Length: 242
Image (cartoon, helix red, strand yellow):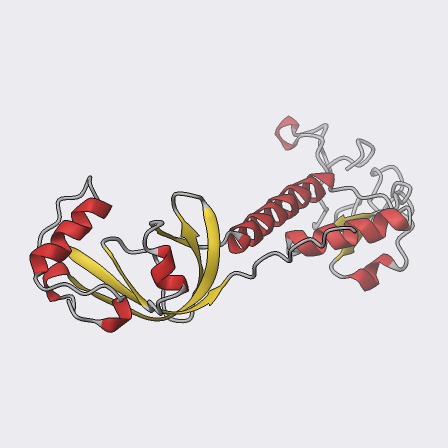
């Protein structure tokens, strides 16, 4: 309140101070607006109107806002980023730029996370085979593989088969079944595994050769992966020029 408007009898009672108080007395001369009693607050004494920015909640609010805009606190980062682009296209001033900058940072973080997820999805899952086992898969109808670790695969997954010595992918397979068991319970005569064993000790020794760092016993966990194999296409031979 302006210093022109003072409380009634401020000069008589110093404790009242000069702060404006509306007079309510029945015989108050200031309330009755008697001459010489002081200035009473009334219409016409106000300050000049200052144009205020418009509060924006949706794209429609940007149609008519010559005095700038303030984005609502209820707007999310994506919508704030979208409205910021539209406001810049129209040349509209944005007053709460702190919210815009925060929305831009969040949008960039979301895009980065999305790109990382896509990159992870593109990474092909692989299953390695020793070179002496590759012909069994390619030519002799091997449809099962015994493993001592979980490859994180489930039925329906597609996996690339790789020659571990040559680091070459020789085909792809669709996993049809995954079974967890122990080495002692594996079928020694299963034709799907191609190689058969007479005793479980022979299978244990075979695992020890493939997993030299692992202590293999009949109680060791094992995974049986059944698959449908598709060999890789061989590159076409180049024709010799005559």
